[in-house]
Image 1 (cartoon, one colour):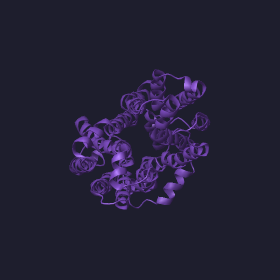
Image 2 (cartoon, one colour):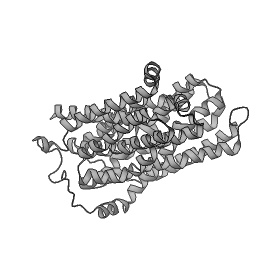
Image 3 (tube, helix red, strand yellow):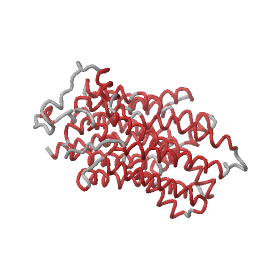
Image 4 (spheres, one colour):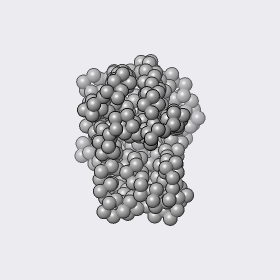
Length: 416
């Protein structure tokens, strides 16, 4: 059984690495994209965001498909769409084609996380699930990192188009391994189940609206949902977009130094996510304590940046960004597991798909909102004024307090 679990984790996490690679890769080859398609910075933003809209919109449908059709089929079919989308992106002859291909990548990869967690929920007992989810998030951090320096090196050798095409082809190999070696549950491989009898069943006869109604009527689900909107707004709206200009304009840092500080988010994902899972499962034996204390730490981090602001040194920035990486990205899987454990396993995919929609709602809200805050202030000598960034940080501080208050209202779901 343990060997099967290891193979299962390695193969599925390889596909999740590709999810994070595609999520952040445009930032590294941005200048190449501008040159290849002769586009403006605004158009580049549209191209990069083409991944997120279908990704967000498909979270609920793929959760439902994972419950009714089965997670393995869902991953394989959707990942094929993403792989061919990536190859098409690398071959794109013009800007509109590139947008469509990028959207296909987001559409296809939307199925990976929820379906993977659905499979993990049937192969690993509840006490192991947060640790496995934490390890999965660590692999996502490797995917994030692989889209930075390694992608820059590879694109310098063979060009950005060939680099993206190679990743698309590698994804096809991973998909083959998923199709060949992965099964939805231990029973499908002739092994004893690890969950209670009847919990692992997939049934296309389930009433989708009834399942969604059960989820939406749960008040604790909404505590996590609002928390995720705030966290997603910070992760994608600040760290995924405006933190670079913030470090450059406020502290006068070079691109390489700012990049090193930003990489602390990936470092936190890689090294801390598995620890968070272990703390949740073994040490604290609690989901809520992890979420509450990390949310409080997030409040303190934003308060520190606001209070010290331009007086912060480089070492302090490295430490603060690492801590915020823990509080924003590393604990996300614990929140996902909490949302899963609020409901019966029969609708686990639906609940995880629905909750996984909310971080991207945060991205859709906060990315343009922060842009509006900066644009309203206007640029002076190629930089936004300090007071505009202070306003931005006040917004994130207030939302971090709100997230903390919301997660306080959530119930404990750990059951050993």
